[in-house]
Image (cartoon, rainbow, N blue to C red):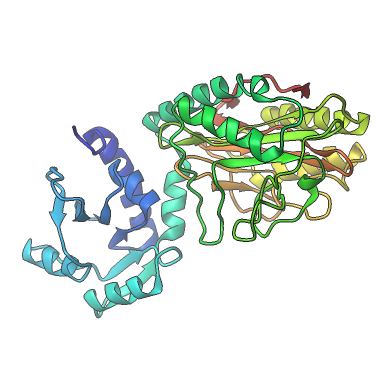
Length: 390
């Protein structure tokens, strides 16, 4: 079984990185994080992907043994990379990009020693930008995840029974997702961002601040992971916001739907419908060339004009964005925030999540994943959006 990308797809991705490296003045980049190794090879291995502007691309592999590909070169330690390049007759780069924003400090020191007398630069932003525009191959994986995600969500209401705790309900949903093929991996960029399989928020727990930069918080089950459900009983009048894992292919869709137990406050209903209206407005507004911050401003204005500014993107603690790119990781570029410098491009895949927290009821609103195309947004999480009773 070939573990690597088809050659044409591999060359398309490597060429994009190479072109961006030339523009920024790098001679080569050395990739070492799982997400970016997967992006540039199609397989997560322990080691490095080396991309040179002169056209060379090599997979320096430590583990596992037995990988067969013309680009695979086995190394026992990172210091051997420079030695191997020289033994192949390749000139060492004068300016080398490393993922300095993401790799451990000690690894950076070892690589600096291996490539002594070379200028080391941070290529983290370059790789994030490269990944933000998806290839057709990637879009197919995302759309497949979207189909499976929706199929799993169609079974959610039947998993509920009266008297359940939020933890019990989330476990049932997680079980269903795994049976339906969800990989379980919730890959997030950032060293202090953690979450297990997604977020389920019931009632007042949605108003509990979390240390993580997610749209919604929650107390969590333990101080070691202070986010999400807190083992409270799901009571009449509670909203139930479900934002669970959509990783079925190595590429993640992001989708939130909201339910309620027996009854729901009229203000919560109005806020939920406003969330849907914001999605419609953004779907018409976002095109290639539109600034991401302008999309945020439109959503914020709609919330303000409707009198829901106090509840928009949180109540006690607010999130500073209403959407983000998705793909291999759940928080990619572009970021849809008031100070974002990102501009939408054809092939971006974004999650929009204008949400509200209503005191006494909980969180309401929806999240969908969209592909940015020439004519607007294509929703790939096509599932009923109305607020509905469990």
